[in-house]
Amino acid sequence: MEVVIYPDAQRVARHGAGLVEAMLGAKPAAVLGFATGSTPIALYRQLIGRYRAGSLSFKKVTSFNLDEYLGIAPDNPQSYRAFMDREFFEHVDIDRSNTHLPGCPPGGNPQKVGPRYEAMIREAGGIDLQILGLGQNGHIGFNEPSSSLASRTRVKTLTPRTLEDNSRLFKSGEAQPRLAITMGIGTIMDARRILLLATGESKAGAVASMVEGPVSATCPASILQMHESVTVLIDEPAAALLKNREYYDRANRENRALKERFGEFYAER
Ligand code: F6R
Image 1 (cartoon, rainbow, N blue to C red):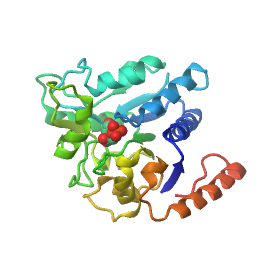
Image 2: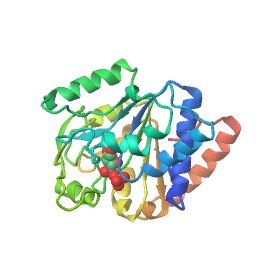
Image 3: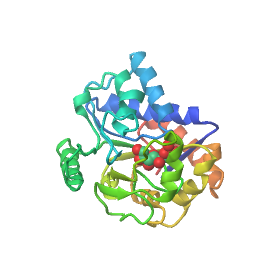
């Protein structure tokens, strides 16, 4: 695992955007996995800026989002489809027909969405770079604690903790979905490269469990310890509970020196 700690969330977003840019430079038709939530918004703004500056194009990109609420229509402003349109897709040259979320159309059978989504990811050639946020309870996607570490895309019941964490995004009286369809942990682990962003002190406990705790379904993100190509980008407040902080900083200094000598894609994991 590459753990990189920055003084602030802005630098986290900048590094993340650099990795996306490097990926698209190497493979303009890459398959990207996107996340919603507050954390990646700064990353999306960075990417939009780079697109406007002409250094980046999403024209050939295919994308798959991690998750979508169940029971709200795509044109509901609270849907993750609406979030992605608003925060990212509308501002870049991505072909909207190549963007996918695991939503279930009204009246559709939600149990059928998962296998179909898995098939679509496979047919696209698999995910080259998956962007992740981190729940305060250690979830990735909506794979809540106790999720099977081998799970595939499916319906998940959100925990009281996640419902409470996300209630800030819903106005009083507005219905908050209690179920979602999410890529499974096995689906996420199939991505060739993973980029996880976590910022703010509310994430410090989950970051410590993910990086330094035992691999356990109690902290679903801890499974990332078993992926060969994960970069964890965090800010100081999110790093506050890491025990081996000095080691990560030293490893990063060494990695930077090696990257300068041998090229961008070298990194110690
Ligand atoms: C969103 C998602 C979630 C969020 C996580 C953190 O698509 O899959 O796992 O990444 O809940 O959310 P924020 O960034 O709002 O703290």
